[in-house]
Image 1 (spheres, rainbow, N blue to C red):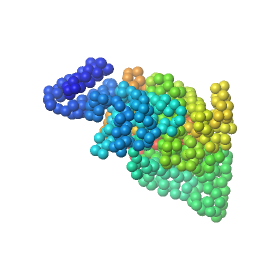
Image 2: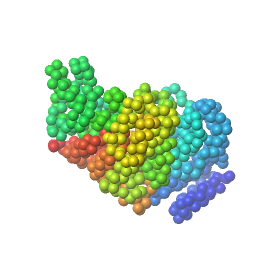
Image 3: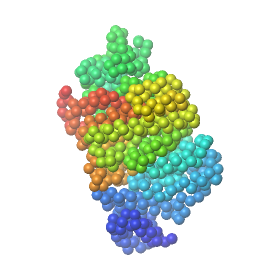
Image 4: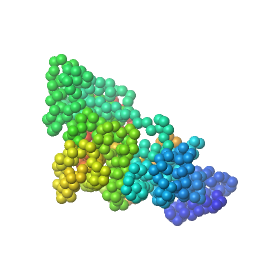
Length: 618
């Protein structure tokens, strides 16, 4: 097929799909380019047409991102295997295993006939779901490449390989489960964590799959807390008990200790305790014992002064994240796990067990139950395949099933962010997600057995259901079934912010509001345009920038949502750089009083010069 024929066929297809009027400028640009470069290559033509499409992209003509993606796809198909796109998957796998690019496990665990049947699942049409930014990110960052750094894989093959790796140890109806996993990913109904996206099916070389750098944690009563806040460290987390927030509100004193000295003098670690009830409990008892002990050194400051330093750091760097430890432990289902060990598990779960539901696609499609059923199995399988799993991970078999695309879903449903309707919608939706997730884990327990610590958990005792006031007949039946059959996973739901996977899913980030309807995102290989999904005259008014949203409504939504999330929600807050200190403090106090477990990064328009240059008084 000649270059001109390929180009003509693509342009004809785009006219049919988007309308000739919509792509008229592209047709004109193509005609002018061919006149100017009659002997030009197809790759150069494609790049020029992509540039033209992206130059047309705007809030008023968002469809150009899909046109640019289609041109990019056509170029990829031509470069790699045209005209035999997505054909003979078994031969493709075998060849890349022989070249040392794919893991031999793919041909060891799957027969040639199975590979043929699996290859038949590929649906090329689903490549058309990609926006340009999603496709560019996939091809630049995650696709398998050869020794010359040329891509040897197409997007649907990446999804299928992930499904094969995660289902490799299934013993019953394995091909059907691979088909379901592929269906979920290729429709962009879910996201997978970046290590799996990057590494699944590839032959790992020594050092390829190193654990990511650990987050830096510190308790707010630690003697080194002020230096920790001033230090040049990203991804900082502070553990804050109720007692500290009470002292902030009352403008009382706060005492800092050396944990080693506390252990030596008192014979215990404060990190092993928490307040079992609001306003009372073992942590404050042990803490006050430290305060009153004559041989224990302490540094006394005003709690509000330390809170000012925390807020100062947040507005200048975005960090630290804040974890309200008492609430985390009061709500945990596995109280028999050591307090200090569980805190890290609850606030920073194992990365390889993370996945998110793409709400903006799944809920309108009515496939939430089908998706969660396969998604829970996929994440559970990842626990056994994760070489970095710790003993506590295997004992708890904790999942991190999150959500993305919340603002997208609100816009599609024409629900304003700052509304009671949005709060009620969050409550209803996340209760449904909790129910479906627990049900899916229970069904897995029937098949594969409950997690080792189940019988000592609040899942088994029913306290989990009591605390959340799940008393409907549907919930009562599930509670009885869980007690009888067990759960495969000791924790299941959490929400973290992953902007990269949200871009791949062509959705909005996590549970956060958008920043802009259209903007440029800087990636390793350049700048790519991002436009919010399904932007049209009807949804436009429901896409409000986070910087202009009253964050108290964000807190209300999250308080409703948190009731149904058994781990932490990393809730980022968006504030103008002109925010008064008292307003930011009010957000923190309300987050704590709303029984949130965690708040994440504080985003402001720019640095907090206004905050720094104005006297902080309360």
